[in-house]
Amino acid sequence: MKVYDSDRKIIYPIDPWKVRETHLDAAHSYRNETIFSVGNGYMGMRGTFEEGFGGGADATFNATYINGFYENYDIEYPEGGYGLARRGQAMVNVADGKIIKPIIDGEELDLSRGKTYFYERTLDMRKGTVERKVVWESPGGKLVEFKVKRLVSFRRHHLAAISFEVKPLNFDGRLKFISHINGNISEKELGKDMRVGSDLRGRVLRTIWTSADNTLLILSQKTKKSKFTLYCAAEHDFYPEGDATFAVETDDDAVKLEMDTFARQGKSYTVVKYLSYFTNRDVDNYDDTELFRMAVSQVREAKSDGIKVIETEQEKYLCDFWDDADVVIEGYPAAQQAIRFCTFSLLQSAGRDHKTNI
View 1 (cartoon, rainbow, N blue to C red):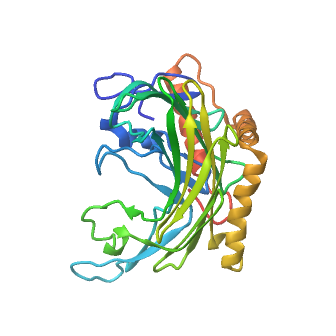
View 2 (tube, one colour):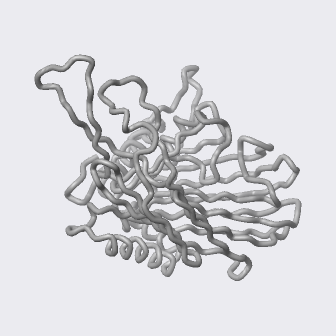
């Protein structure tokens, strides 16, 4: 982990168990999104903001990956030669289920606009969560405090969970949350490397099915050449219970849930999103119906258990992990933080299904 920048200034305050970002640094968003990524060996999510960031096309790199879920591509050379590889495989950026967009009395929450009075993002390596705390004023003068917590479960390898809490500080007004699974995802431009096929630039996955039922969202995708299939499902809780109305919307590449309420000054409103991913590699005999059932069952079970149970599971898993894996360095706090970050990153990266590696 890079602790200092080129001027030997500390980037992230030294803490033995946490990595903290103490101000919004849009100029280094790619680096910060990497540091605040979360995963469990099966899936990994870059540390992009759930609500998005409107700083321009190159301001952020949003991605979710599934270990072992790849696309084939052809390799072409200006001149042929014996023994040159003709085909390659690459992991692909899958449907984005992280999206939760708050609309603050008609204005989208976007940290590239308005004013940010307080910002902190923390990776807690004992709890296995990334949490943001922000105080933000919209261009129209609406002041809100919001807290976002994300985890990718080590106990339930197909599950991620996000909690998004908003509190109006200087107004009463409409508050809408838009939860979204977006299948219209493009691969990042990979430059002029001849080894990377042109068919891995732009859209790689095609969305084959979307559905919504009350607070349940489902989207399915398929690769073009490797013929892999993916199901993504999301379920939701809203607090305070009974305070919101719900509406769903589907199209060819996306499915959305809108949660609308009238928010009171000083009162908190929270959406909890339970998100699952399953692919045909997770079943011995591929069957669309079985993948659908597994994806839906995972998020419904998570919703029934509740976010506190899932957070407790995560913390207990990491307590056991650190009991076995921790390396203690005395007298060098920066090295202590760094080695724990490296160990935690390895834990997040290693496949545990006897099929995948790192």
